[in-house]
Image (tube, rainbow, N blue to C red):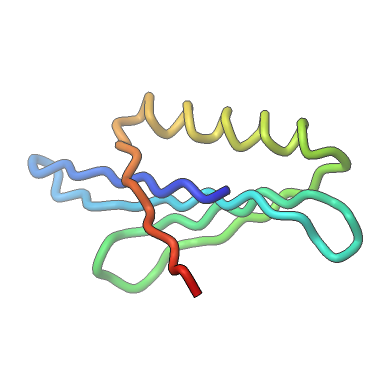
Length: 83
């Protein structure tokens, strides 16, 4: 699962993005990866958190998504490649 969120604030000059990615590791754990930073500029950060079950990882990803939406981010549809 991958969710992309973006925030455009023209008054403050903020153009930011956040990508949440939920995936399973080779060892069977579940990873929630959060990548965020300014749009069109260098910088940003990555954060990975590992969970024992898919349900707990999904709940954490949903909490992150809701937190960003409350801060003014908007979900952007992500088109994945076919091949």
